[in-house]
Image (cartoon, rainbow, N blue to C red; front, side):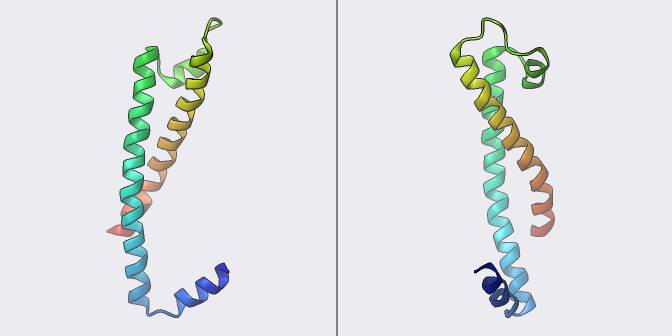
Length: 99
């Protein structure tokens, strides 16, 4: 199916293909910026709650007396940190396309 879509897309005039790519990139850029803001907000909330950065926590390890809640939140914290990292890598590329 992907090859068929690519062939159909390539049949469009160049200007139309560029417009579609720029429009799609602009939508993705907006979505990714919101995702980054949310991920940073969530990570910041964990830092404030536990009074430690994720990188320091991973260096030191979870405390021996860490609660079940902290273990679960550590997993969420890592998720949000990875989400933010991925978004930070993709945003500059999308910004170039949109410009």
